[in-house]
Length: 102
Image 1 (cartoon, rainbow, N blue to C red):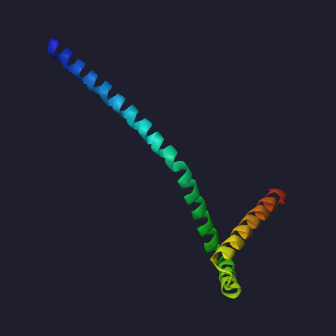
Image 2: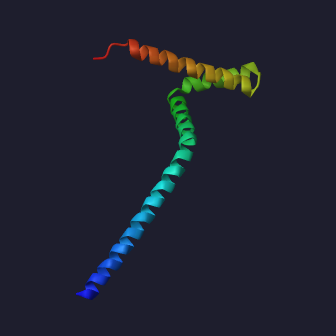
Image 3: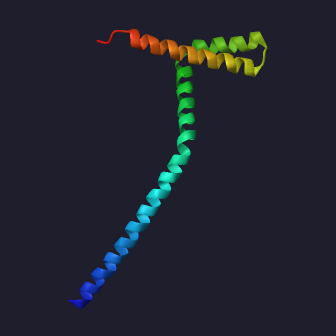
C-alpha cells in the first residue's frame, strides 16, 4: 500500500510539472501569436486584393493597358491603383448600406 501511495505521489508530481510546462508553452505561443498578428493582417489584406483581382479580369486588363499607355512608371500606377481600390471599397460599402435587405 505504501508503494502504491509513493507511485501516486510521483505521478502527481510529474503531472504538476507537465501542467506547469504546458502553461509556460501556452504563454510563449500567445507571445508569438501577438507578434505575428500585424503581419498576418497585412497578408490577409493581400489575399483579399488578389481574390478581388481574380474576379475582375477586365479591371486587370484596363490597369495593364494604362501602364503601357501612360509610361509614368510603376509608382504612379501603384498610386492610381490604390486610390481606385479605396474608392471602389468606399462606393461598395455605401451601396451595401443603401440597398434594402430582404
